Length: 219
Image (cartoon, rainbow, N blue to C red):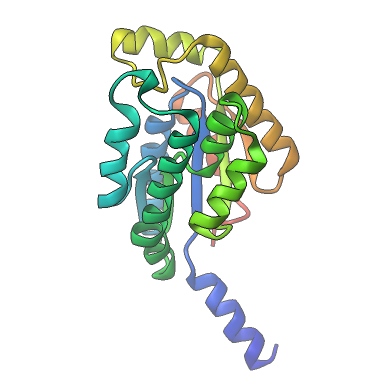
């Protein structure tokens, strides 16, 4: 192996990994993000846990605009643009710096939520959402996207949230069914990056399934 190849491999191994957790309402993303972060730290990795919308000072300010208030507060187009603006700040201020120093970044939602929620279920179109985000983050994507699937997820979310669901989570059942189908299509179109993970059963078992889908990325 020549010196150029050694340097190249060293650079690749020094960079961290970016993993997003996706899925519909009530599938356990937040719980599994924490569990996955703990499991990766046990392997000696630095792990940053973050979320969307949010994850940086500017993006957290936009989060309040997006999730609070009446469901009709924003048009679906304005909503998509706000998500993209928050994501641009999140990537610039939090995700890229962590990856550059070799940390792993776990994010509760990223671009695939915009593709599923605003693009497919919201009717804007997946390709238009891709175009907006290409401008915002320059084609930046997770190394792996893990989509948690749970047939009773919406029922769980409804029971948990009651009247307190945010303006997006509280949308009609048909909207969330469309989101679920969109995630399935994304996994079929990008099987190397996007993986469906069964979120049913024991929480420890679910974390093990997530780790199995990251095995090829681990050092």
